[in-house]
Image (cartoon, rainbow, N blue to C red; front, top):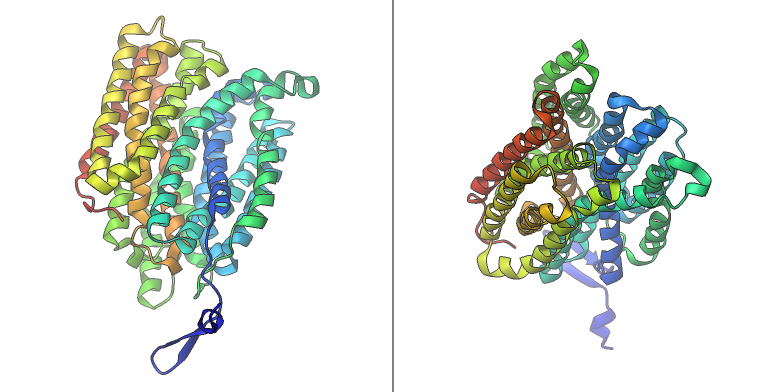
Length: 489
């Protein structure tokens, strides 16, 4: 080995010499697998409860409002704390926060699985969402900070594939676990729904061991302090929007829901003013408006919102429609998603090669294909509802999944393509917060629309109307994709 290869390197800058004695952290294959496992867990758990809600209701006598909170409590705490989780990772070290988050996720999953009543389950779900918010932002930030060039593009594609596949796989896994009830000798009839939470415990333990060995430590070179006013105002903004939309229908739209919705625009405006003022003063706000001036990030997020609203609403509605409308069991309901998952995964694998050739037009093509799939599903429901089963649903599910797999991974790459490495945690937090808030908004809006239509129109027509609304969201995504930068880095 030559002397120059071990000599500390120096770089001349303006009037000083900066030493670079430490090698750049590199995320290897095992480390990438580990952080992707950490990315999968929170998204799986957002959807895994959809098919378990009827059994939770039966076992704990939860009622509609508390069932909504089982879903919304997790989503709200998750969405509210994601950006803060990214900031803390920048400050204290992303590997350290990832380890803390995945350990807390395992413990809170255990608390969910052992919950003796509905309110305890809701509290454990809120804590589980908070632990997910510590873990997930570190995934994107670590990929941004510890990879480059072709390896980063591949890692981002795999992250997008993992995110999309996890959302579908969560519903499949939930259905299988609820039906299998492997712990029946211990928990009796409640074993099915409890297993959807308890399965996280050994997975989190494995992830903890792997992360300690294979994930490199990274942090921002100039970490910013926590933006307390920004964090509080972001929390108020998200809660005043999502809480009433999620709980309003089940609670009968009491006065607090309308007061909360009326407060939302004021809270959002106050949040923007506080962040803009901090940015202009040279401080580093929670969500820097200057970061939102990045063309790729801004335009990419504009597509993530309608995509996630439609996707989140669809996954909730289809679970309810299949179990309560067609009286399919939880396993059959979950397995109906299998063609979508397989097609999504195949499209995700083909995506990087297609992007190199066609750029962001892959997203446009994916939108058109997804629209065709949702249209096929609507026609299938309209003409074959009475005898509809897994075989009848498969064509529409597969086509829709193919289109989604061509969109989501590419959108994630576009959103973060121009975010500087030192702002990786903030950029990842902004993207995941947007995605999570939109998923929760989709469950709240499309779910409420569907459930409000059922008493008067019946399950079939309510599902058709909801699918047509989702089709409008897909059309918006497709049109907005024409404004994306043509080249994807």
